[in-house]
Length: 219
Image (tube, rainbow, N blue to C red; front, side, top):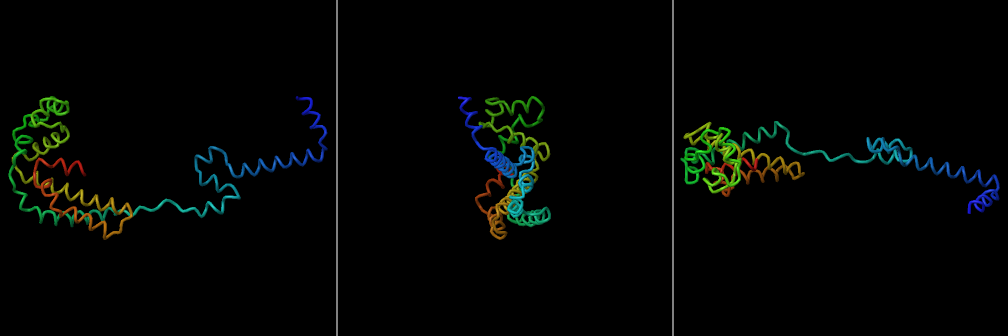
């Protein structure tokens, strides 16, 4: 037990005990050099490691985070203007289009977006309420957006179409920005955004007034 351990310890020569103690101290110092205090390590891991003379040279060579390759504000603005001109040239025939099919139930004849008072807004967000039954669809944010458009334009349909085109262009620009931030080549990202802008599959979402939900939700 404890007596035997004490006897064994006393049997070790003093020089050997001092050498073992010195070895333990050196081991603790080496461990402390590789393991900085917790506050330093978690507060700034890179700086904490550099404090160690054994790690300073290696950590200084560590690469930083990759730089973003997204578009600058000026580049994005110029791209938006260019896409906007092209989009209006493509969708010009639709700008004067009248209300069509679902536009009447969603906008023209919908009593729940006529005023957007507190009672109407509450009804828009009530699942299974009269507003959702009226259009046979629970889409409160869509109806709220259509209510804002109706308050701004009412029966002037070009206003609705212009906003649809603007949001479509914004989505095309955001696609280019996303692809550039994903480190896709500039020409490839620009080509993808241009293809999205002019692809015929988007005509319905842009030219149909009540399909503004597609463009706004994507943006």
